[in-house]
Image (tube, rainbow, N blue to C red; front, side, top):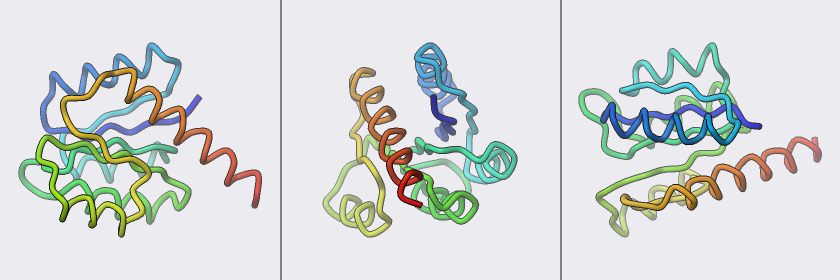
Length: 128
């Protein structure tokens, strides 16, 4: 399965997402903020980044995605937010975010997004 990095400043939520995806067979790491996410990504080299748009303290989710993308160019980003807007959707499209998900969402929808991202990445790796 895929290596997934989850970045969310809400510990309970981050743990819940992590446990769900581990149960589905993914190799999962998590981080509470952008700074730790970038450090983790350097060692972990995730295939998929699940990142909350609004993080406390240091970075926004799209900034984290850009930094991790520099480390792993094939990265697929799933941006999650409880504060959707047309401007954010536009920014996500420009940043080539793989999937935009509004909180709250069903875990089956997250599973589908991760599976689609992993499949898309595999397809791209086959082309190179």
